[in-house]
Image (cartoon, rainbow, N blue to C red):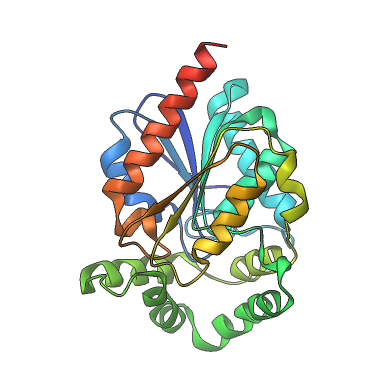
Length: 260
């Protein structure tokens, strides 16, 4: 069973966390956007409070599982889809496989997939073994601080570390890492005909602005913005700016749809 957190009313927004997160990664969005948006966030299969998949999942499986959440919760009306990092790669695949369910696409700190670079894909494939060796707490303690800018305070760093430690486990994390390593959406971006917003923290050293620019440049009509003073976890580190962009883009998209 897939665990989904839901709050608020208005246009529906499904939020897909990164490879080290869960629905708890979107606490700043639930805090600030529930008055204007119907927010849904999952723990991906094999993460947090969701059950482990009964078999290895690839990216199509994650995209189809997320599409099922949209259908179950929103019906044929679909939802706006926000994906952070790995969640953005899943969101891109949803847009390619289930375009009728995606009202708009919002890609935060994301990429075309690690498969675009052999070295990056190779490192991604080693992550499960590292997690097995270190355990979730030590693994999170080493990785989570890298996801924030150099000016992030101790409180935010501790929160990000705690969320990661509570969210990740095997085999789910290994399936997620393999799905990233096997994916390169570069050649498919031009097929996306959905309003798209691409966001990148200007201090993101994990994926970074160049990777986001590839997405924005490849998806027809995509809007690209940077979030000042934010690292990879831009939605957590600079929620005011991040939320303002997300909310504005969704309501602009809704107005345009209503005038068609």
